[in-house]
Length: 76
Image (cartoon, rainbow, N blue to C red; front, side, top):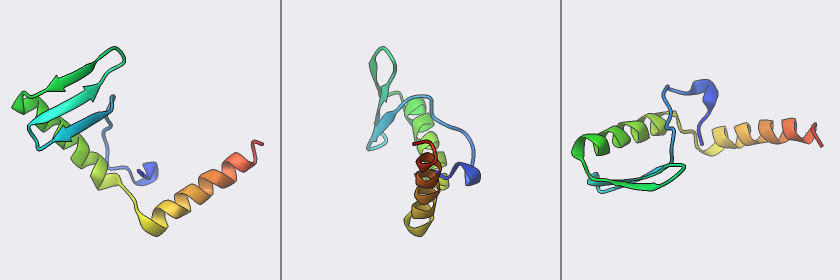
């Protein structure tokens, strides 16, 4: 999970999967793209590295979820 308050920067527009840094499968609104061009796969790797740098785990993610749950409880 990403804590947007501590977000490092950047974002991915589409979902994607990396396979052994040789293949990226990118979900677009109209197609599933299989990309094996090394430069394009490297771009997906940099996007994933950016997201990983912003990820939170354990106690931090539980706090974020508790805050979100409390905010949504007020809407019901």
